[in-house]
Image (cartoon, rainbow, N blue to C red; front, side, top):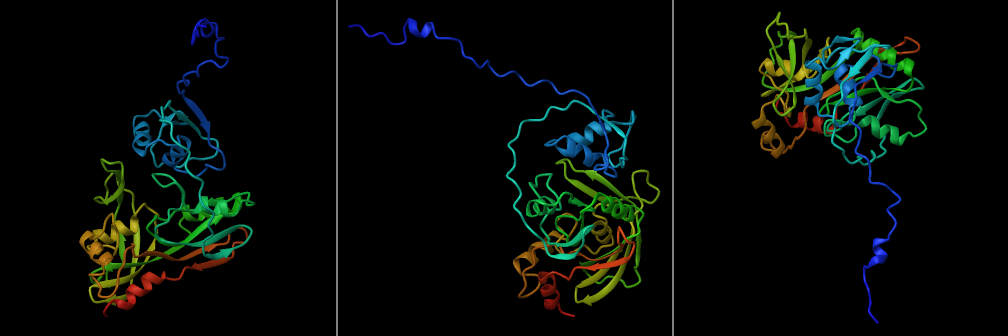
Length: 340
C-alpha cells in the first residue's frame, strides 16, 4: 500500500474562512471641541492626552509648524483652551505600543478632605500623573484606590521631585473654582527650600522673566532671560530666610506666578541652587550628599523643596483655609545634622 502524504487532499483544502487582516487606515485630520473636562488646559497637554504615545518633540513640532489650529488660527503650545474651542489635530502616525500595567491602588497622607476636594501630602519621587516615561502617578493610584469615586481630577501640579500639599477635586465645580484661584493668583503657596550658601537677607524679591524650552533630547528646561525679552514670561518669587546654617540656608519661598521650575531656576540664577536639584543644582554637591560625604553621618538623596503651606478659599463656601504639610522626616534629619 502506497501512503500519500500531502497529496491532492491538501490541494482541495477550503480557503481560510478568516481573510488576512486589513492594513490600518491612514490617520486623518480631526476637529475636536473642547469640553468642560479639558477647559483651562494648555494646548500641549491637551495634545499629549489626545495623541497618546506621541513624543513631546512631535507635539511641539506640529504646533510650531501651524498644523495644529485653535478656532482656525495658529496657536502656541502654552495657550489655555476654553469650553467650545475647536482644535484641529493633524494626522499623526503613532507606533503601536503595549498597554501599560494598571496603576497600583494607593492612598496618600490626607491633610484635608470633604465632599468637594481633598488635599494630600505628596511624597518626593512620585509624579502627579502618568506620561513622559512615567506609567502612573498620584491621580491614577488614587483612582484605583477609590473605584467608587465618580470624579477625581488634579487641581494643579507639583514636580516629581517636590513633596508637599497637592489638591485633588472631587467635583467639577470644585475643580473649576480652585483652578480659577490659581489662575487669578489668589492662592498663597509657600515652599521650604534648602539652598547652598548664605542667602543675603536683603534679597527678598526675584522678579525675572523665564523662558521654557526643550533640549536636543526633548527634555523640558527653563532659563532666565533678559527683562523685556519677547520669549520670557514675567515670574515673581518672594524669599525669606527661615534659618541660617554654616554653608546652607533654609528659605521660605512664596511664588506669585506659577511658572514651570520657577523656584528652582530663580534660586540657581541667584547663585544658591537647591540641595539635591538634579536639573539646575550643584551636581558635585548632590553626589556628595547622596554618598553621605557632604554632611557627616547623613545621606540625602532627594531635592530639598517642599510645598509646606497653601492658603485658599473653600471652593463651595468661600471660607478661608490654610493647609500645611509637615517637613518630611529625611529633610528634618538633614537639618538636624547641619552645623549652625
